Image 1 (cartoon, protein in one colour):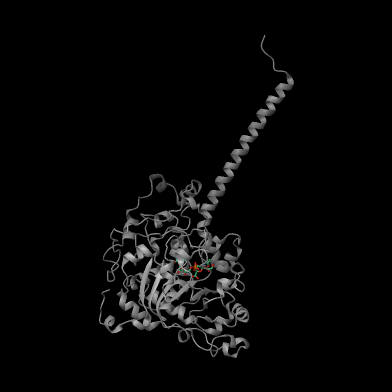
Image 2: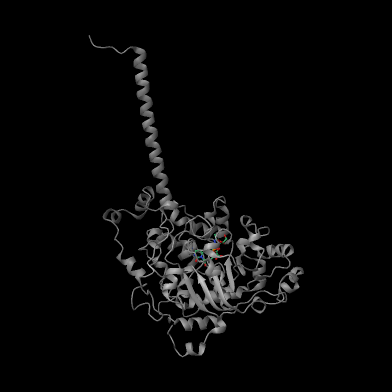
Length: 499
Ligand code: NCC
């Protein structure tokens, strides 16, 4: 006689079986849902930033981004934020001080003569796999997203950031002065190209730049061009339309260059993450004047960045955003303040005054009431566009039609006040890292390579103008530039290309 399952037990077994079946279906549905979401993300995300920016404007998007995490502030209207596991950071790249640093670019090499090392590396990179070539791009992207291939290099797309910044990264050992947007990964490249096409400030440009046939000037000639064509100037209280406004008295009567300097030696301290563990603090403080940017602190970072701050150059976003507590934070209340805001290319002051990117003038007035004795200047927008023009004239491709970063503006400002200027970690040293700032913990290649600002090209220009050896860049992230007052431009005009 066979064993009979009693009715109640039978019910329980079938109930269990049904529950298990439902659970399995549930898991399958969830998996299907996750895969569809990942596919959707992979297909849409690549275009979402430029499209949102084009339709609603950069500020609308940045405002809409969550404020809780500082990573959203990586780029002034730049690329999508990314989150990276700090454990996966390439971190400090150990360098051998005894090893000669290969000179990756020489002042007079022409673009066509040789491919740059970065470009060569790009060409040598593994071709895409067989399956990757068969599958349409959205599917390969989806697979990358699903299996984590994009997590590290979200902004640079095809090329992970580790490949840019690591020991064998595309950035090489010392910045290559022919870096171009084609070397960026697909995502960052798209953001950059988007800004190259967008023209928010009405840039009108006709110069030798933007084409590969433009003349490539020697370092000394570039320096003299910069000196002759760029005038560092700030707003004064006698300038229209300010002179007729009730608060004009708050503006200084003289320009910054007539009030400050000359200094013998100056340091410009970028905010780059590669300043961490640099031990450069003492060296930086040994300069007669030190310029820092935006919200970059010194307290707690003295060993790496020093403690002296003579001038702080701040963008209008810092003045306006609640996060920075511009009016109340002690970070801003010592030294000389210099502020700037992107203005129309025409540098028409009335137009700019009526439509600033951020409320620079309202904040300026409030701050001046609280700190009437602190010197506080506002850069004339003509200056930012003159610097932009120098970059564009000397590049082989059209650059972003947005003002240069505070980094280059501050460097040129110091060149007009000092005999010699050392710029730290603007051109990344052997410590190069995707860590955005030395004082924050978020990672984004765009901080170093640019998105909104034409930072990539700014760095090309600075590399060409550098008078110091490549070793200084490699070990200290240090660039040496002569002050405008110390330049011998008759020699440069005679065609001298020597260092
Ligand atoms: O990041 P930021 O710059 O304040 O850095 C100051 C200057 O240091 C150089 N830098 C920085 C980081 C890095 N990894 N490499 C670098 O070479 C750059 O030259 C940079 O200009 C700016 O230029 O004003 C900028 O300001 C920030 C931001 O507004 C402030 O940090 C305040 O939060 C911009 N980020 C955003 O707008 C979201 C940044 O794009 C440019």
